[in-house]
Amino acid sequence: MRILLTNDDGVNATGLKVLERIARKFSDDIWVVAPTEEQSGAGHSLTLTQPVRLRRLGERRFCVTGTPTDSVMMAIAHIMKDQKPDLVLSGVNRGANLGEDVTYSGTVSAAMEGALAGIPSIALSQSYAKEGMGDTVPFAAAEAWAEQVLRPIVDTTMEPRTLININFPALAPEEVKGVRVTQQGLRDYGRLRIVQRTDPRGYEYFWFGLGPMIETPSHSTDLEAIADGYVAVTPLHLDLTHGPSLGRLAELYA
Image 1 (cartoon, rainbow, N blue to C red):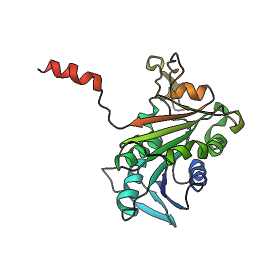
Image 2: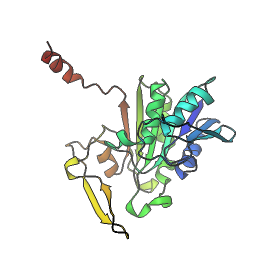
Image 3: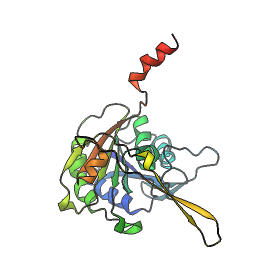
Image 4: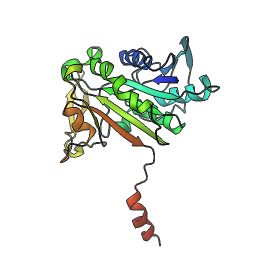
């Protein structure tokens, strides 16, 4: 199996090294094509107004001066065009990608690009507690649980134009309660926090804070699974059409 690895934290990120160790449990044919610099929050963006540069770092290892989407496109359409990957793994992201995060996440968007190309694609992210900021984020849960979580997915056939979003809780491996298949959750946007501060030169700046999750009766969302101590496995699809609205809108123009 030929596996393409990418991320949005950059080619030198700790999580990418973790992902490479995980991937080698499935294959020796591992290719890395990742952004040169961190691209967190890049979403599914493309670089269109300036050239994208490709640098070879070693055997089957490349970096791209662009977004995660650029990296996957470069891998599939250029670097690996003669023998495309059988699987795309994106991550392991430093921080969770839950709920509406999937619309902003470069990690998830890289997996989306793989899915658009018809390749089974999976995004992996590691939650962390507040005391585990920056380069000290522990990836132990992801490293210990990833093979167990990935194996059933890799051994089955994924539906066309779908991808899997996996999040690991901010717990020691032995404290993780198991795996839960979930729906994508939502946060309370009305309780979005914007923290306003002033820099030493007197200019204002702002930090965005996420609102609390919206709880469901069965605790069936990815947000709730992570909060409950489970690995969250969430199937996503690329067709954003809202089926129930089709008929109602058609009636408006009849």
